[in-house]
Image 1 (tube, rainbow, N blue to C red):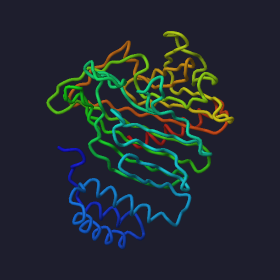
Image 2 (cartoon, rainbow, N blue to C red):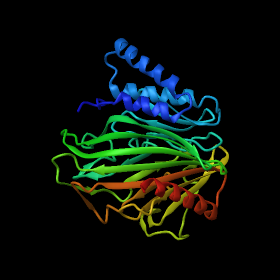
Image 3 (tube, rainbow, N blue to C red):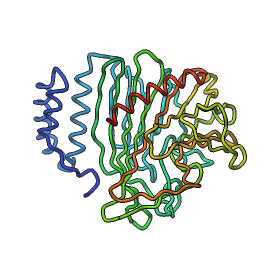
Length: 355
């Protein structure tokens, strides 16, 4: 199937609009008219792009009366999730140059913590997920490395209730080797979780990985830092403090690089004169407990890994690999006890989704 050419049932889109919002009837009628008009004006507009645009448009209109509500906006390269019209995340939905990833993540006060493609490691793209598949490196950015080809984007959802607001979307991605061979098929979901009683930026990252059609198995491997990797902005390099849920560090791999099995790992450091704290969470239902890679020099880095450098995995057809991680960001220095509380709340929310 060509990129972004998945069929859309417009009756279901209209049903969603009618059932989701009090103003649904008017919005659905307007969107039905827009569907016909838009296709006449722009025949190149694919059904999934049009449907996503309609849902985003109507969702935004429906919550316009609540200035603090979560909102989702999108253009050709970026999907953004905002609260009170201030960005929480900017997601790079188009390949840049061979990955799709979460490009910016903001503290509650509006400071971005992520660095995209720094000169020392141009393949470090903010918050990204990459491993090796059948020996093809999807982490790097060379001619021999694979690419994450976006196929479609949809399943846009905004919900609120019981003190929790959530906004997210799902992207379909093909992992393609340099010779054009498809190595993995991924369904990636990015969701912002807003807790009414806590000032924290909280994101859930889900990756559902499976073998492509016709491929019976795929070997998963990689370096000791391959996984969900986070590159901090330059002002946070070398000056912060790594710590984790168990209060003890794992063995040194090289230099000050460590790999530690634990349920969460955090980093606190100055950002433009103010301290921020970032924590990465592992969900207990993941196929393998996270081994967190941490380093401080020559730059600071944090990643949740599957320990593939020591324990490679084989992904079998019909048995997908489901991964769920969280990233929490605070203004100020946050201690382990407070991080643990947010971890437990995030875990409860994420676990309820899986039931």
